Structure formats: C-alpha cells, structure tokens
Amino acid sequence: MTLDALLDSGRNHPRRGFLKVAAALAAALPARLAAGLPAHDGSRPTPDGAPRHPQPPRVDGQRLNAILRVFRQFGGTDDGGTTRLAYSSEDIAGRRYATQAMRQAGLEVAVDLAGNLIGRRPGTDADALPIIIGSHMDTVPGGGSYDGHVGVAAALEIALTLHHHRIELRHPLEVVIFQNEEGGKTGSRALVGRVEPHELDIVTASGFTIRDGITRLGGDPARLEEAQREPGSMAGFLELHIEQGAILEAAGIQIGVVEGIVGIRRRNVTVRGAQNHAGTTPMNQRRDALVAAADFIRAVNDVATGMDGRQVATVGRIEAVPGAPNVVPGEVRATLEIRDLEMDRIGRVFAEIEGRARAIGADREVTIELDRFYESLAAPTDPRFRDIIEASAAELGYSHLRMPSGAGHDAQSMAELGPVGMIFVPSRDGISHSPREYTAPEDITRGANVLLGAVLALDGVG
Ligand code: GLV
Ligand code: MN
Ligand code: MN
Image (cartoon, rainbow, N blue to C red; front, side, top):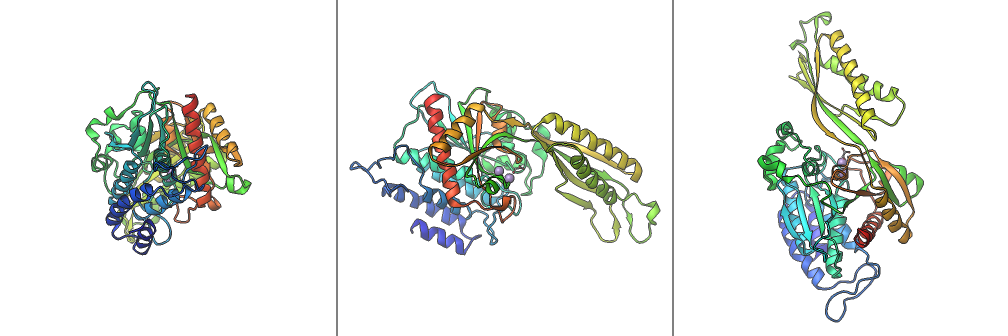
C-alpha cells in the first residue's frame, strides 16, 4: 500500500482502523526512505544510495504535511478538526505512530516516567548537552488539527531529514512529544518538578485522572519526581507552533519570532448554595448557586476588562449540580483562568476577582471557593535564540516579526531548564481550539525550515 493510498483510505474512514493504518504506514515509511525519493528541492540520491543533501539542508515539505495528515487518523473528525484527548485511545494510537516515525528517523525511543515520548539521537561531542525540539499531540475537545501537531510533525521531519541526509550534529538531539499539554502541561511541567501531588487526582477531559493517564502512556505516577531534569541540562529547546491569533496573517508576515509566553493561573471554582424545589421555593428565599456563578462570571470579565493592559480572564467550563430543570442548583463547578506576560499582574487580577467573589458570596448567601488547579510561569524566550531564529528566517528569505504568545506552550516549562525559542506560523483568521483551525502547508514547511536552520545554527555555536 502506498503512502498516498494509506492517507486516502484513512480519509474515507476517519474514525475506523487507525491502528491498522498506523502499522501499515509505519511499514510504508522505510520503503519511501529506502527508495531515496527526491527531497522537495529535487536533490537525488548519491551513487552509494545516500541522498546528497542540499546546502543548507531543507525539510521535505511533502513528507512533513503527509505526517500531519496521518495524525488526523487518530481522532480526526468530519469537520476537519481533531479530538485527541490526552490519555484517550486516540492519543495512545497517535503516539504509537509517532514512535514508528521516530524509529524510521533512527532515533532511540523511550517513554520517561512522566509519560513523555522521547526520541534521541547521539551527537559527535560526548560532552555536548542535548538540543531539544518538540511539542504536543493532545487536543482540546472539538479541537483543531494543527495546535501542537505542527511542532511535533516538524520535529519528526527534522529528525528524518537529518537521518536521510546523514547529517551528524555535534549535540545530541531529542525529539519530545509532551503529554497532556492541553490539560495543564503535565508532561513538560513534570520535567521541571512543577506537578503538584493533588494534580494527579484531576479528572481530565478523557475521563482518566492524570495519575491513570500517566500509567496508560507508560510512565509511573508514583515516581513522577524522578522525571525531573536539572536546570542547565540542555543546550536549548526550540518549538514550532501555529500562532493561534491573527497578527501574522493581518500583517502578511510569514514567521513569528516569539519574545515571551504568558503565565497562566487556573483555579477550580466551587459555588455552594442550597438545592431546592424550583416550583415551591419563592424567589426571595433562594440560595441559587448558578445565579451566584453568573454574577461571578460577569465579575471576572469586568475585572479583566477594567484594568489597563493585556491580561485576559476566562470562565471556560461550568456545570450546575444536580442540573435538572425543576431544581434550584445547589452547587456549581467551574474553572477560572487568568493569563498575562507578568506574573505580578496575574496576582493583581486574581486578588481583585477574589474580592468580588467574597462580595457575591455575601450578597447571594453562597460560598465561592477558588481552589488551586495549576500554574504555569510566564517565560521570556532567550534573546540569543530570538536572534538565531530571526537569522534563520532571513536566510531563507522569509518575512518575520517579533511578538508575544498569548497561548501557553510547553516551551514555558522548558524555560526553567535552559534557553528556549519559539517560532510561529500564521493561523487562518486567527482561529484555534476549533475545528476551523488552519495553517497552510507552505507556511508549515517554512516554519519547519526555520526550525531546522535554528537547530543547525545552535549546533554550530552552542
Ligand atoms: C494551550 O493551548 C493553552 O494556551 O491553553
Ligand atoms: Mn499548543
Ligand atoms: Mn492548545
């Protein structure tokens, strides 16, 4: 079965047979590599069978975008989106396919104790620290097919390109697929010792707790602390990602050079009132948790809107208990999330929201608890890495722009281990976390080539 036939068969049956497809695709990849197919620049194999790599080397854009299409076999939905919730069977199948691709790229594959999938390639200098590239493959419910996936596919493609062209790096290279990025960056935060014990009990969107999820992926939640890496243990981390906003598209710019990533504070919100009969409880005798939650949601929006600056605050999930038309809700469970590039400002927004929650509680005779869920530290990218990425884009003739990231990324956890850099490619209409998320194949190839150039530059200087 050819690669194209595999992709076509999957397109017709997006939810069926993905394991079979993954296995068949894994078998097809080596044939494609062994055949020494031309790279997208048209370079041909040398007489000894090794392809002569272009100078400087470029990724194979067709293969890269084919990998992305194959990812859709694992949770792709008919509307063009993907639902591949962390720890779900789709997640596990997708990682199995990525494992095969890593092996095809000559990487040594392992799952760490936190459940991150890691492919390693040795460097020529035994003392050199690893250069790490990667992103995540899990999605939000009803998510898109590019968020995280582009960075993973590009990292796999770069490993394939290096392998195919027999390019040795001085530094070891690690391709990392972080687990549960969307549910709290569990994989990358475990690497920096930031996953708190209570988080293991959080029930994720797939229905599995983080504890069970880590086990499902092949990690060991009881030994999570051992997954932690030492600060200074890497030469650097580079992540390619879709912008998820509309700045690049509006400006007609091809590459974003990320200057910093927002910090995130998430809280579980519990509003407790009194459950009662919706027909017999007079309006002035109610302690309606959902009405109080409505006040709270409005207050969150008012606080974030009313302050100067670019902070954002969101109540993204809400559930009334018991949730019946004829019952005054006694309890509401919701989430609160605050983001900004400065942790201090997040603290100020949170303090004001806490004050408003106390006032609402007193007014509506309910309690409002804001329990710790998780926190990601805001992270500037490394100034030297920004220069390297910018130079890589300039060398390829791509327009570029420095910009902040309002979305969270695994790179912000990795910033605690050493220097990080991030490359953005345009998102159509700025839409993300939606099936309508889209980035053009040419943009993805451009981003991967900038990433490859940055890896090679870092290998030369670091
Ligand atoms: C990740 O997509 C996030 O910003 O929440
Ligand atoms: Mn992402
Ligand atoms: Mn996301």
